[in-house]
Figure 1 (cartoon, rainbow, N blue to C red):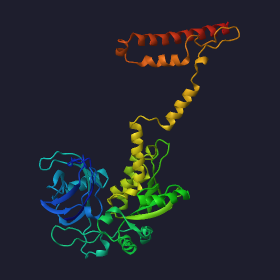
Figure 2: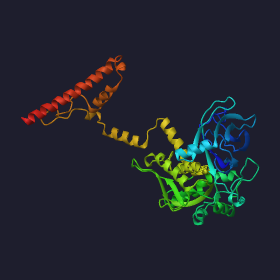
Figure 3: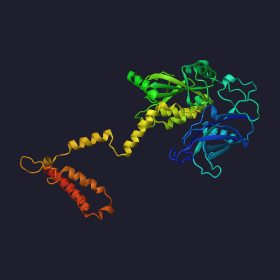
Figure 4: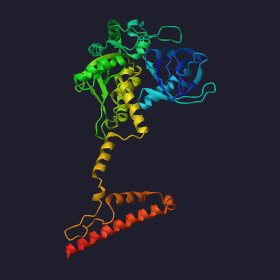
Length: 441
């Protein structure tokens, strides 16, 4: 018999069940966890999303005395207020099989394909984590737990593992004066005293550190106002086991953008505040596995100010650690910028660089009086310049050479323009060759 814990991390591209005018192509998903055919837990509902992020204490279940052939089933439903909940799919697995897959992949989290449930269409994936917990006969300590376990035999589960980091590393997160989103959803107290006790008693506290971008005091003043409007310009980083991880950009090709520094000591930005996201049930080696995998996915050259910045890395890292997401106001301004940029591109408006280039081309374009061929003192045209056609006309005709052959066969004028460009280049080449011959002679 084995003690295990199951954590539902998130879903991706799940089935859309809401088709009304207000929530088209969306769902309100939640998960029900079954062990050997018996319902044992339910996750909170995530509103209007096909990519729900669960995690946190309300998405974690610990089991005592499980056999190796114990079978889990996670059923996904769309919550409806006016009718019965709609099925969105399910995943089924054995706990020992997930442990074997994670051991072979050297990665604690496993993605599973969602299968059909009650005849619904199968769509999307679900990320889960199964951990084997050490056996311990000691009585559980309520101060060391951040959630209530649901044992299968009615007996209380044993305590959390005691291989915690040193106290000074855990106390480095004591500046977190507010609880993260998943802890707030779980009803955890948001007072300094309660958060302090949770952080000290936790095995591996995960803390989000929020900075004002750059060290300019004007940005800090702007964020002081913008935070009240659920916005601002922030740099974000995640601390675990005494190290702070974040993401930055660079033009170097084969360099990862993930870097580490001392907590709350990033020299490029001004520290603002922290949020305690929760307790991580992974060992330092397993955390290193996550960081190592993400390094290849978050290369410095892929940095995007609106779509792939430090805030989105912190969000992804927190989800992979199993503590849920980060506050939306940290990256809301980047989402607005991405929406504006997408609209600009879809509307066909030119970028700033494109406008500058176009303006320069118009400035360098010869006027009507300058289209005449330049002559030397003898009145003959200069070598290498066509006397009867301007450069703009030649470039337009040259670009037309790349048209489709089938299109040319139905347009005689287009063929004439292409041929004229070829004759013009042949004439210029012959003139240059004659000039080089005279020089040699």
